Length: 291
Image (tube, rainbow, N blue to C red):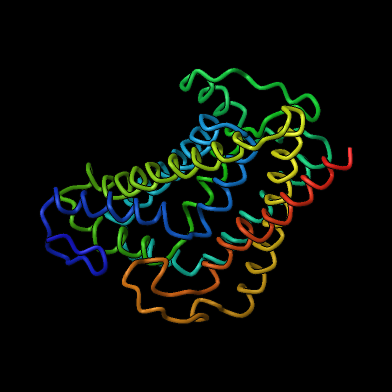
């Protein structure tokens, strides 16, 4: 029987991979600071169902690659990899910095920083996307930028990472397949992030406003969430480097990872998505009404 809460150290190959896939799906749909704020930001900025799904896919694609690499490293050098479990605060700082810079650029110029041009071009061809010209307010959020966020966020640690790296990966029969638990975990996350991104994009696209107003709302909310959410990540990450915050929080009793222990990570996921996004949405709508 599959046990997502406390997987055993003696499972068949099929059970290990199915456990990793299901854990990834739980990770993708529950409040998580390494997925929700980023996918939400780029999905809003795409202002369409398809664009939101692409944003979720782009983010989780890089996330999956990173988790597969770390899974392989876990198999061949487990002790060294486990040292990374104390680097969550540093990941917050790096992710926050990238978010804030991207958000400031969007809000100031209505454009997007192209951090990984060669990957953007490859993804454009692979997904048959229409190249987006960043020319003023009409520019949509670059879902390709989510690639960079996805790879960085993949280094975040927590209950899911611990299970994948210390329980599932070591059970692989050889180094040739040591990456599979991380890969399947990433695929599970990808499935739910595509659905989440598509839902956000759909909701934004159904707003009863003109096309120009839609563009403004999407850009404003996306930029605000990235900028102010990034600042929150930066502040919390910097503080956590000085004062460890891993033990802060309370237990809910819900035996679902990301919901059992409500701590700093939970609020980093919720604040940008609901609080900052809600205020930004109201601001954008009020400004449109005044025009």
